[in-house]
Length: 379
Ligand SMILES: [Zn+2]
Ligand SMILES: [Zn+2]
Image 1 (spheres, rainbow, N blue to C red):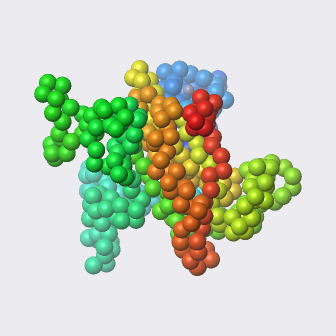
Image 2: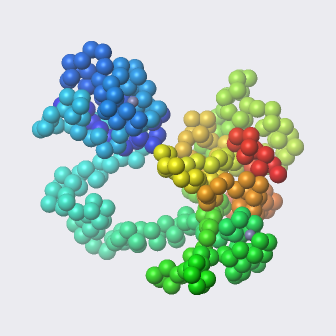
């Protein structure tokens, strides 16, 4: 019996315990089934079963580069047709990880739907067969998306000048040309000079900033009892033994508290760091296209949570092709405005852990970036 393969879905989080455990099980299985003593094919994203390596190397590759996601039938590692897969994954899955158990149950129960688009299949079966009449589960992907929008977790598109001079927002929202360089806001047809239009009649901006409003995202942290309780961790649970494990152990944190005793008096006030760096979404492509994400890190949370990808708040995606350089100021405007309000006036929200309404403030303590970006940011 082949080990369970659910861990392969966690490829985006290769440091995850469930993933590491899966890698070890895979290695045990592969060496046992192939009868090899030295080397096996490495199914990591880089080697893609083309190269062979020792157990140690394959293990490291799988944890660093990740496993080829669609290598689900482990042919190169001794798996043969008809072999069943162990289903122990649900037992080993930690409670933080999303589980696909329900999906599997549905697939087992309604095998005739297997060929269909699984997302729709789940919704239809849920709505008509499993839930009582009158349930209000969204009927389609589109409806589900609307719910997300109503929870205000969507993002705003703000047009930007192609030369990074300005954003078309607030009083400039309706302008057609950049106030500084005079370039057109939208893509134009090179033959007749008219604005290009999409099939739905909308004109196409040359550059778009995607901005993810911060306030609703911070409020959401307090909507979960578990996270709301952990937002106090740095004060309530942290052990002060002189060892540096969390920014709360640092001089910067302590002197901030001394300077702002009001802010420090409520441990729920949010302390954040801003991380930015460009990245190339298509790693092997020669295109210069890069996206500049800005991420906010919540330092109220314990060290094992605050640096976890799922707890980052994506603040904005600045479009390429080249980095915004000094013009990053231009793109930071919506964030700065929100941060200013969060620092000065604060916002009301409900604390699910304390079961009460309260007003919280937020501060940006520091930024994390390489030195070129540091120069741009501090300008
Ligand atoms: Zn490899
Ligand atoms: Zn311009």
